[in-house]
Image (cartoon, helix red, strand yellow):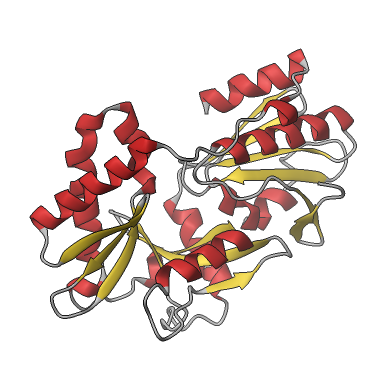
Length: 288
């Protein structure tokens, strides 16, 4: 939150041209493979089966009985880079998550923990490729379209992980899954807070599901979000939601630059596009 606000101050009051100077996504990081290999080795020491590094941040677990699980290690990489001694805690967290998976035995879906996660279409295609590695059948994640850029992916939020639901899972037999999932998330999240600097406001709610606040119609219809014109939002990463007004030219310019910057820098990027709230949902805003 403090990092976001520091950049907001710079953009709003110093006029920085961030779109042109945004850092590219990290690539070719030699520490990433070493980190992934350490996690795989740690898992192999604590769990049965074979753990194979597929690529940076991606490990395949092959069960003695033949079952497979493809897992990502990206979530804790920043913790590792900050202090490599965290590797044991990272491995323990991964072990706890695996033990909750179906490969460790029957899993009963908790309908009260189903939550909506905003993703972009590129993520959806990447996920499909990942989970269908070396499989003859097609596995998909439970999702639905939100707009032409974004999708709503459904997951079970547990103490140790966020587990994306398979499309084949019977997700609580809800007639309106999105409404149920949004209500669940509203109950699970801390109070949504708003901080405004200049023409831009930042909404925060715990650091994991900020982008999903796009689905909270009560926020956008309440009138509590004060902007000049229509509400224009950016969700460059999963933990970042910024808004301004469509009639605020400086605000839109700053929001666009911030969206490009944070999208480029984050490992959990969603979209560098801007979205405007119209007729009960956010749609792509103008020229992005």
